[in-house]
Length: 415
Image 1 (cartoon, rainbow, N blue to C red):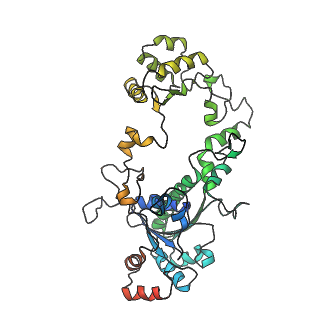
Image 2 (cartoon, rainbow, N blue to C red):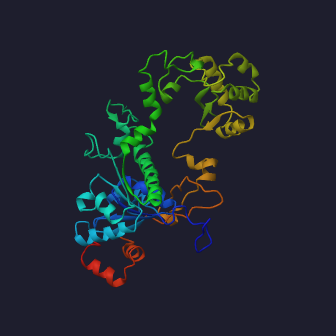
Image 3 (cartoon, rainbow, N blue to C red):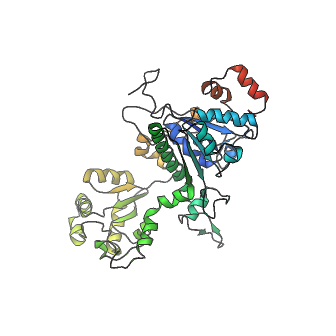
């Protein structure tokens, strides 16, 4: 294992350089790469990425979205409408492993910085475009924001208020998070191959595609159900009856269901007979198992209202924490039910996801979930202000001296 000057393990992606031209959420494609040690240089126009003013909360004038997505990156201003700005971008691309276009596809090409130009300059360059609907299809030029990819993918049905007006219900965003993760995976795959073969590549990611891909179980189930029922069936425990796809089929479940605890809720998941028997034994109710043994696998005791009422009364007798401890002691399946507000109080969260402190990052934020055993990833630097790293990037990457930097600044290319 190689180490840095402080005798610490080098970050896994030390030596990888990413040149990113991004607007808003798609810039998250390189956040995880920066967390892992890649040098991510965010190229911004003189007016800057307006992510700093988008959505809430705003922390001392800067959005949480920018503080999180742009953490660990360096910012350089380049006016790509000027020949000097374009020339400087090309010089930076010569020293990069990848160029990321995190905006509408073709934006860099219109500036004379498309893949063909960059590949002639740097044959190993990996060029990745990430956008809302991708480079092809009838929606490719459609303006959009992140929730659009989830509604497009069928993940968010409309809710209705008391006046009968539809509204966007609370939901975890999918496309704006999954798209960047798929993109980061693709970029790393391209870099590995380019370092082996000397040949770069071009790839593209649509956040809408990623939202649909993450929900593959439901869409593939509906597709499977187009085939005859004697070929595509349900589980043996349901007498092969087809259930609704995914979690929709859980609604009538009993042994796999949410229940109220003494102070909140728990998720009971005893769909295997072994876990169900262990639960009944643990609460000293063996007769409950004898009366409702069920199938060996995938049995939710669907529709057994008598058993559901019995379990509802049982789960109210202990707190959520007590039920979690019970599950570990008795080898059965019970999980706490948290909310985005209460998750930080969960001991599992506190053990594995310590907050990156606001004193260093502008706001308390979650760390990377990737863990390397026996070493720690370096804490990412605070998200940059516009053009904060102009001089450092030109000096570190291109080796320019102060006179050369001043010369470029005088052209206005640095904003």
